[in-house]
Image 1 (cartoon, one colour):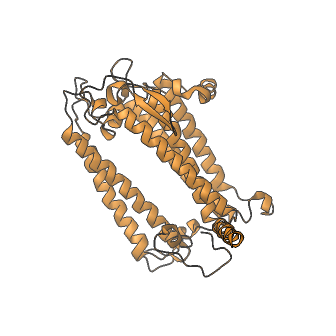
Image 2 (spheres, rainbow, N blue to C red):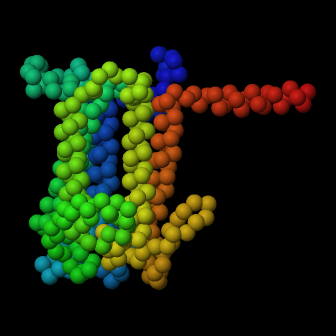
Amino acid sequence: MQTYGNPDVTYGWWVGNSVVTNKSSRFIGSHVAHTGLIAFTAGANTLWELARFNPDIPMGHQGMVSIPHLASLGIGFDQAGAWTGQDVAFIGIFHLICSFVYALAGLLHSVVFSEDTQNSSGLFADDRPEHRQAARFKLEWDNPDNQTFILGHHLVFFGVANIWFVEWARVHGIYDPAIEAIRQVNYNLDLTQIWNHQFDFIQIDSLEDVMGGHAFLAFFQIGGGAFHIATKQIGTYTKFKGAGLLSAEAVLSWSLAGIGWMAIIAAFWCATNTTVYPEAWYGETLQLKFGISPYWIDTGNMDGVVTGHTSRAWLSNVHYYLGFFFIQGHLWHAIRAMGFDFRRITSAVSNLDNSKVTLAD
């Protein structure tokens, strides 16, 4: 957090990030608790949608978002291949159980464990090496070796998640709108296709290409993760390499930029792509409009639509506007991380008002 040169600065209760800035265990606790909140929301919403699902109305016309994603993954179908909601309740309950585990972990990091992982030995009284590993994940904001080490582990986890998705499609199978059924999908690891699709990814109409892209990401992310874990800063850490710029605020700004752009890309993809977002589960494709800002409208027949809009319309518009505001948050925190004092703006406005009063007198 920006201190404006005051080492003893204090923040109000609403500045939540300031509470965890230099307390790495508290920082981890907030992340884990946030994950628990997400898991609880996903589980609860899945059960709520399942309880009000009407099989006589197309799923995409019922304003649902959790169940359509499960259907796209091939979850909820009976042996005959019809979507009945089978196993969906289990998925919802499993998310709720996971949320409780995450909540407990968040409380442990917030209440029981040391505020800083550097001083943490967990719940153990001994000082064995395996119990000192937590100290390696101490957050040192202006230490590139520390930041690259932690980044590497994040990338490995992302890569493993991609492998899980690719293997799920290969072994279990996912829904293919072209045949309106679940089928096993093998990844097409064609680097030429992957390179070309970075410019026309919205038009991808092959599940094999989708899985190939995820397989490539898995390899790329795990390789990058291993590189970041194994390597350190080369040479002197200078301003050219980011000295003085790396900070909690800078890392927050990059995180907001990443999630913001992902949300905006997902919005455009969801609005028009029917391979990854089948019409059977999300409703008809959308039309892009421009007013004060871009937005998408439904193009299909809205008679009998439960919430007034298709699931595709809800997902696309909400993702876009969340992404837009995430990008604004990125700009705010990035400018602060570079040292700009926003109090200059209020000071300049105050001086301008005082000048007007003086001239009027």
